[in-house]
Image (tube, rainbow, N blue to C red; front, side, top):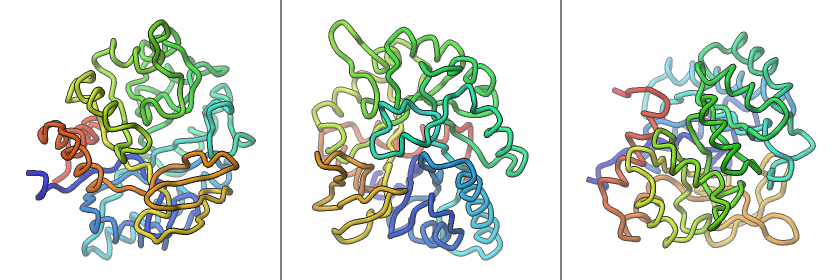
Length: 306
């Protein structure tokens, strides 16, 4: 079954030397035409934490790329819509993303409304740190129109539960860039476990999360709620070297990303096919892998592909 599968990647910044935040429609088109090499059928181009005008340029580029691809046809991965990972995140959890460009959710409504006015229907997923000023109010206002996903957050269990009650329906790359899960502080993961209707993205390169913990997650979280994502940057499908991720220099070496003096992770250079193969090799049920790589990403977006 897995060998014949085509995958859905709803969190991908770049690959093959291209990056969504370059705001190049030609680059996004090249990326879309090469993603079938990774057996990706459809994807959500994903932005970084960049200034508002550059976010708008990204939307313009994706909109133009999508239109041209539809006109030209041929073999390419379909663009489902944009995943807005930044800038509504906690500066303390920004990681490789530029914390100087973080925007509190209290100031986010105008940005989202500007996007929708100019590119109606293109925005699909919005990441947000609910503990920030205006976070819960932002979720209440926009969760009926978009997937609101907790990300890059210091939220504890109680705040995460409040966010889910307000309408958030997803967690972005669970266990990465968020409060940990410990014996007396279950954090975002604990809240997602207790709420049986919350989708959880997971990076399955075996680096961001250890294989043992991946096995635990695939037992802990209902099989209809896990979503495998690549979270890849432009170094995916490229040789080792130094690559830009927004304004950061990221070293790619032996399948891992490194940035900063401590060599922190900065996205991945994996792809959906590799991750599916990884999960099978870790002993995870192929049916669960299929759901997490194909059906669940579409379920979160309430989409059906032909």
